[in-house]
Amino acid sequence: MKDSLFDLSGKVALVTGTSRGLGQYFARALAKAGADLAITSRDKNSLSKFAGEIHALGRRTFSAELDVRDHSSIQRAIAAIEDHFGKIDILVNNAGCNIRKPALDVTWDDWNTILDTNLRGSFFVAQAVARGMIQRGYGRIINIGSVTSVSGFAGLAPYGASRGGIKQLTMSLADDWGSHGVTVNCLAPGWFKTQQNRVLYDNAAWVEYISDRIPVKRPGLPDDLDGAIVFLASESSRYITGQTLLVDGGISTGATKATV
Image (tube, rainbow, N blue to C red; front, side):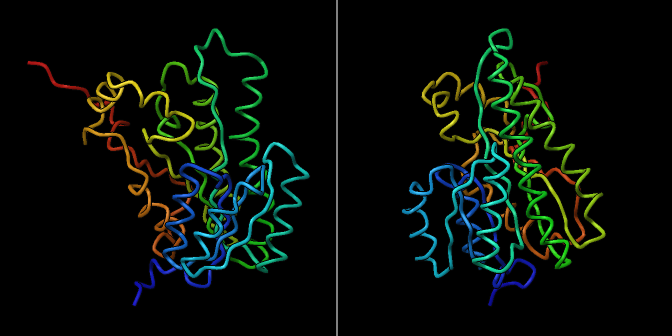
């Protein structure tokens, strides 16, 4: 029997940006905990294989086309998901992007692409989903941030600004919607290998450098996030809202090798 504090049976979770990367790991972890899944991508066809995987876990699944930079796309996708399942209990605001450049090379369009996707998109998806959650008096919203929500890294100025904004947005929405039974928290991964940053992991020297800065001495593995995402989606976190949970191996401590 599953621990009721972590059992998501009967819940419907929407995870945005699930055509690849950490979004699929979040969705898989929630499905294994009992949730039915709505998954999204700008290209709905890219979801077919993963939808089959979720279905094989014994969960209902629904795929929707969603471009978080397009307000009408957000409205259509949320309406379709609610029409299919009748509700959305859990939102994982995962869809995001990055353009890695030195600050002097960042263009106006680069900035808009990153902020419109990561920050504006997350807000308007949360807003659209929260309307139904507030009516039903229950919801779990998990905004995906990053260690860059609390720390600065060269070459990541717009990205860090967007993720810092996610942290602040999370606190504001938590205050807005807490009285309606909706919690809003931020899950902030550290250095995990994804499609966006895989080029870095091809550089052995960089992997050694970043591992040395992480107190547990390794980058994250995708299943290192499973417990955190289920925790924030479940009854076990019912009195936690407005918080940023860093799953980063300790790199945000700023620790470096001691010298004597």
